[in-house]
Image 1 (cartoon, rainbow, N blue to C red):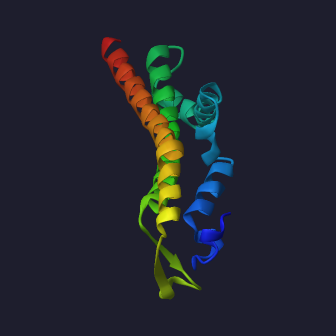
Image 2 (cartoon, one colour):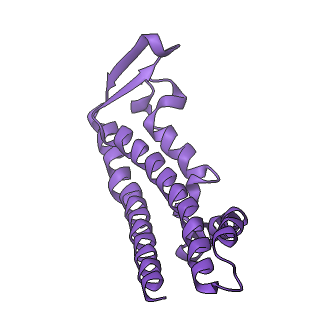
Length: 165
């Protein structure tokens, strides 16, 4: 790290740049930085594993033998709830770090909740952080937003299919 951040009073684990690095390296939050096919595969993986819960619930409402389309729509729709919750968690984590990087000041706690302080970033650190937001985090947020649009489209398609059947 540069020497300009050496005088930063914010504890290392609360510095926005380190929070960004930690999020980027984490198992779950790093999904969105994968190649598109691998990112989609992770979301499908969530959907498949959540079907362990949703398929029996759908079967309880619609017999797979008598109502296969309704069963499928219910099971997939239920799985999409878990995928949507995963996408929401991804979005909230990345938007939090984006806000911490983009803001001119950093709120931090020295030893506990009762002694919070605010540090004003130097112009160099602010520029660096805003470049990270522009070139690294904004594309991530756009990908997650596209995920939400895709999920919404899938739900609309499912509702349309339900009405036709």
